[in-house]
Picture 1: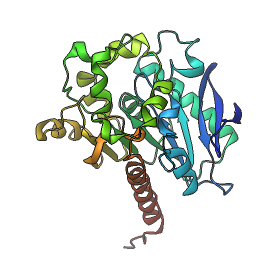
Picture 2: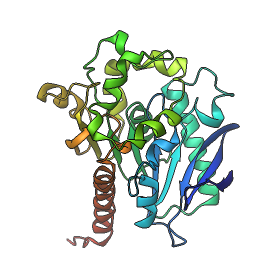
Picture 3: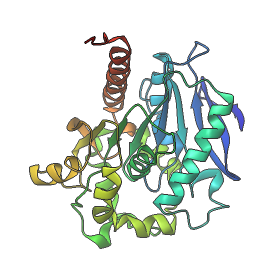
Length: 299
């Protein structure tokens, strides 16, 4: 594992983890205290990169800086097939392979960092598929919870319109929604964050509605879904939300983020959304503390 300062981003460092021989790059923000309250692992969506969660379009929009200021370590990773792993994985990986690679990277991270109460997963769009798969992988990995944004079960777009290795310019509006939801600099920064979608990932996207029930059934922790006010990739009607939440074994909820498009973490609503993510994490920590201090019943 290697780290280095990220120019122009105080408190945020670039790092590369060893995921079983595959280099996985990302960004890291550490809190002031030696032992964090927990580690937030952030996973970007299709065609993006780790900087998605570190918006610099306006002060206060970065999840990394906000989380670190509240006592959390925040680790935003380039998913397998992106960043440093792109050369080793030119076609990317399907979900099972991405899961194995991610968990190997987190093992490497744990060898050099305090974890506090443990890992908490937050993900955007296609990154949510990896977050759910990792949360249900077992093998001793048990995150505190999963917070997802811009991921559903039923597409609101035709199969031919879905993001792929050769994304259509005409689908720009589906990624962003109304221009008023974003600071002007967000579009310049967004262009710098864009990466090619690996072929294996793009092909598997079309199978997600059928894959979802089996993936969801293995997730043994609470899950929270957020949908933007203008979410144009996913159906968010009552029937679609019931199909999304019902396969999950533990408590789950779906909420709407006002004044936002699909790329919430790059918009004006980013700070509000990130505070709600971390409030969900606070609830998970509180639930853990309550369980530890609950009186033991005696016969």
